[in-house]
Length: 74
Ligand SMILES: [Zn+2]
Picture 1 (cartoon, rainbow, N blue to C red):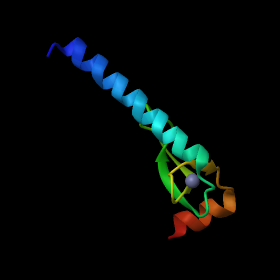
Picture 2 (picture 1 turned 135 degrees about the vertical axis):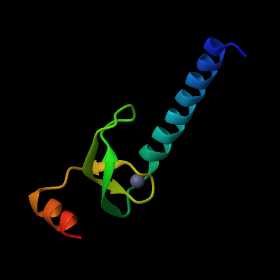
Picture 3 (picture 1 turned 90 degrees about the vertical axis):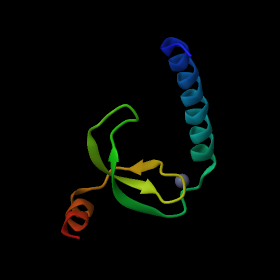
């Protein structure tokens, strides 16, 4: 397969996957959350600390200073 064709297929697949993830995340009620290091955005390599849902991995909030201190102490 030509690279350009391969890329087009992969991009389409990625779009489907992202849509699927978004659908699950929208339906999730985020019953429990943890503070974790996550990528700032899908296409980013910058790691940030966020409250994330244990079920669907959505970012549900930004930790305050207290949360951060407790997290970094562990
Ligand atoms: Zn969730």
